[in-house]
Length: 245
Image (cartoon, rainbow, N blue to C red; front, side, top):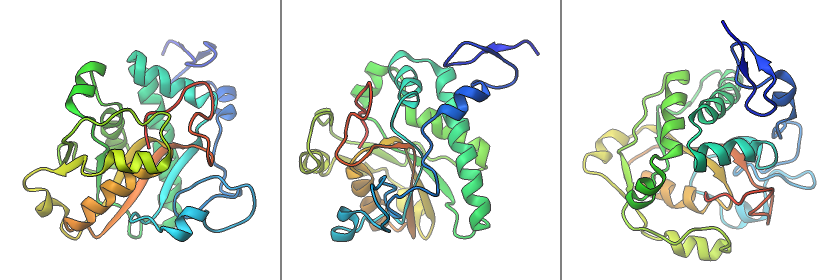
């Protein structure tokens, strides 16, 4: 097998997309660090939950995020999302799959999600971008974890203004009634545990809105899976501002 260049430093590597040094440099959310047990928000001091989850518990059970939204992870996400660098997307899906395999091993696969649902894009945004980056990641992740992916279970029925630069309250108002389930979704969801997949979680507004919709339709439990979580109050943690919520 011929070596290929590391996606970050271009050093030749065999059978991988990142060299060991660049993989080590990624901003992992370490299990030993302080973070909210519900939404994975990085915390400055020891606590089980962030202030928002204490006052407004989310409808999803937990967020499993592998990284902080910081350099150089943001570079990989940005080039996948806005420059259609699909190799970057495969690398990101592999990183998240590795994180989730470890989590599944720790829980001994008890109460593990039974289906995977990527956060949908409005058709106009998907047309402009050419793809839904979360849907492509879900396909890779579903194969890696042997989970069925239901990309057409939910759709974004109205185009909302970009979330960038909005406060949490503005984001929540922006997303109200933005999603609908497709016909037949309640039959698929009935009594099943769902993993909701997003690339970057900022305020959890999207996850809360979608989780309520899925639970009201009969899902027994919803988990949020994400590549990265932004720090508290920082919606542009590094070089690029994420679109996700």
